[in-house]
Amino acid sequence: MGITLHGIGIGGGVAIGHAHVISHNEIEIAHYNIAEDDVPQEVARFDAAIRLARQELETLWGSIPENAPAELGAFLSLHIMLLNDHALNSEPHLIIETQQCNAEWALKQQLDILLAQFDEIEEEYLRERRADVIQVTDRIFKALAGHHVPPPPPLRPDTILVAHDLSPADMVLFKDTDYAAFVTDVGGPTSHTAILARSLDLPAVLALRHAQALIREEELLIVDGVNGVVIVDPDERVLVEYRARQREWQASQRALQDIRDARPITRDGTEIELFANIELPGDTEQALANGANGVGLFRSEFLFLRDEDDLPTEDEQFEAYKQVAEAMHGQPVIIRTIDLGKDKIPKWQEESDAPNPALGLTGIRLCMAETQLFRTQLRALLRASAYGKIKLLVPMLTHVNEVRQTRRHLEEIKDQLRGEGIAFDDGIELGGMIEVPAAALAVASFLKQLDFISIGTNDLIQYTLAVDRNDDSVSYLYDPLHPAVAQLLHHVIRTADALGKPVSMCGEMAGDPQLTLLLLALGLRRFSMLPAQLLKVKRRILDADLTQLRGALSGLLAAEDADAVRALLAEIAVLKPAAA
Ligand code: PEP
Ligand code: MG
Image (tube, rainbow, N blue to C red):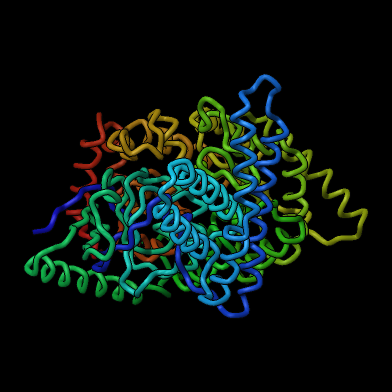
């Protein structure tokens, strides 16, 4: 008899497959095979980890205070001795070579051999050294984790990944793998983990609390991303039911392809612009395949979340931005400047010890503090602007002065480029994200300094409702239909319209087909979303009637709570039933 777990459904769809449970240890001790040609590189990776572990121990040894107990020195020298032992630092080479496996797996096997030998030892002192061997190997595993650990490839096509948590950086790595679905114990509906899940267009359920502990390796799972349900070890009757739902879902996805080339025009003739949100340059393929009118948000910071210790150079960034600009063939490409901090921490950046990172040095604030980082990016962006229609977008604006300072940097870099005879688009537009309530309320002042704005509802909701978007314990309070959100959005859109400046929305709200009618009623005409959502939202637009929606606006704005807004939206949808 199966068990049913409830969480937050992401990505829609249903997957049926077998669990691959990764624990924290297993991420470090992943097992996968490597190509023969990659063996020397893997051996070198292992050696680099040994060197790093040794360096750490030597640094520790060098910093032992004079009055420290003598055992501390003895303990560290024992660990250095173990690390220098052939059994730990050379035997794994042979395993990598003969089994063509990853370094972690080779080390794990060698550790198992050594521990078995220790278990045979009668003498107590020596047997106790077993714990030291484990501690030293742990240090090597950690050092290996700092040196490119790709996620294990799925064991078979229907593999469902079960993890306690996946960071945005883990998710970037998962973009290259081929899982059928994934489920995690934690995560909020607009956390970057959830956003990446949607961008992979996979069914996923987050915030299951105990999935990793309850689900066993290889167990059969049903993942229902629509209802946020995971069924473990389902019986035949349930399986039959879900197979039918899966087929239905697949058919509805196929049906959406019919409107791929249709222009997004409402029933009463207003054309809406639909743009794509992307994280990496390669995502433009999916954007184009789903008929995007351009890129409305390139989260450039994902270039900085790669699994390397260094920042991308100016040239590497230039190539990435140029690639996107060229791939979109002259359609607009809005590139957001680095939005690191909060949950997006690259390898080279220390975990923040700020008391509240979401209110700390993040987005444009970090760029203002790290001007070299910012200016290098602006140079790369300006250089790439010669190859397409690039526009810049600044995240986390709170003070108008942040726009003025950005403009100053931009003008200085333009002067530099002119001096060097490097081509760029002199008229490059500068936009700002409206995602802090202060910027939403004072949007008129921002609009005077900016060429366009884009509303980041993911953060705007988090800051307006004081609900951490990553914290599933309060996700029930994270409600985009809260009247305060609708009122802020209405104010921002109306002010931008009055001042004749383009306004778009790039938060997850824009890609939620359940909310399309509300946003149209509020006056939104430019939407940017993950490519996987484009056709679902287009379907709603094709069925929408703006005259009817305009009539419903005052009622929506006067609603006293989210349930009232929801009821009104349901009424509108019933009056003009949407097909998807
Ligand atoms: C937002 O906050 O709505 C947004 C689009 O930015 P991000 O989700 O990357 O914070
Ligand atoms: Mg944001």
